[in-house]
Image 1 (tube, rainbow, N blue to C red):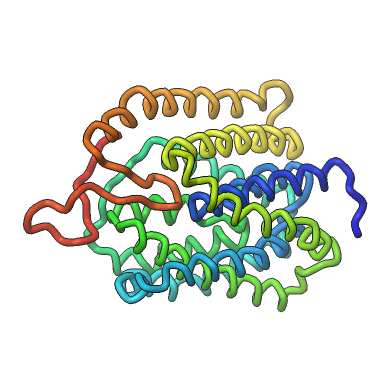
Image 2 (cartoon, one colour):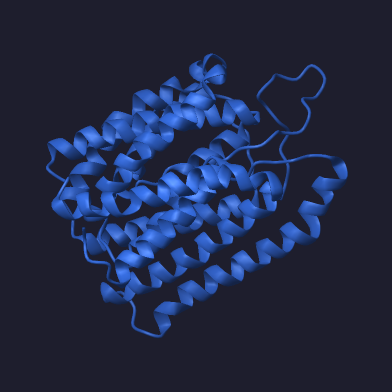
Length: 316
């Protein structure tokens, strides 16, 4: 068994919490784990362990939503085709680029994506197939470098108004493909080191406990409020991580680097205020439950004569 120093304790704690959230909402394992774990580990060591875990988590999500796969398959297959070249390029860079710069890219991409989710921005795209291939390439690249793909998938799927089960089936289908392909490419690049295997062993128990516990307890919690609080936690941690890596790479000096974290907290706090004082009460009064997070939700009723799977633009 590996020695349990402070980094191991934090890793076990955050993966248990992330597994709980994933069990409750159907998403969030990597997007919660990665920002915290990167404070102690590099992507090159952390990613292979998380990818193996996610293969099984995503298979579970896909299995429980398998009935909706036929309805969503044609809408996501262009994304699936685009995954492989993006994964190949991202995995190669992960194996060859300095770990500090990989951390910088990870945090820099995650922070705006989380804030866009928190703002509830939606701009439906009419030509899904046209954007599917380039979106899949970008998604594969992002996932292979960071193991996070939930935020861009959530933004796309919510933009397109997928109902809850189709949302989760599409999410499961794409993430099974990306995690499996990434694991294969990592193996061929020799990224499954002894350190990665040690991390995998440490986090397995928390995943096995957290997912069923979250699935049970979410029945007693409001999913939207719980999801939004988790998103704020994510934004604040990513802001801290980005500030730290700016110092490590000597791009900014302390304490000025922490202005990035402060800015992220200020923006998220404003969005949180809007959520609890304006948008959330309005949604409850109208009976609309949304899914701005990865877990999805039921979109507003389809307008008369409208196409299923689309929704009107709603300004946050």
